[in-house]
Image (cartoon, rainbow, N blue to C red; front, side):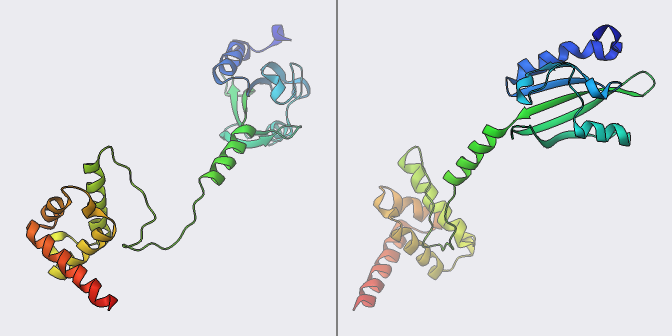
Length: 223
């Protein structure tokens, strides 16, 4: 068959095995001769993907394109399916001669069935329950390499979520920030008082005063 093959197609036969070896056993690569649609396959690698071999016919999709003469369109990464139900990611590239006439096509069919299965498993595994969040109740966890990073994350995130630059905050708003940080256990971290004071542009004694106000308020509320 190959001795009557167009030279352009003949030169592409090594490419078939090269692509298949590069992408592995789940990647079928096929070279078709459009002049013989009933036995168009002139080279194939990893034919087990669709169960085809040299001398096999053009697919129904290929026949449709030949009939319509739609050789200038791109057919890249479209979904197809093998006879035994494998889900394939396919690409068809048409080859033209020196006169611009389509003489063949190179087809790549990647079996992605297992990948889709794993994607679905991962999607289910990573699913989280969506719920409304508040500044005081954030279902998020941030990890730091050391306690200083943890402290910085807590403080910076709290201020960002408050939605107002520190230099525009009133005293009451800063007290509220300190209250939120206190509820998160921020002041259990050594050095937190000084860090928060610096970020809020107040003295460390002011932070102590804010905490006193908060705790007195909590005691009054509990009475």
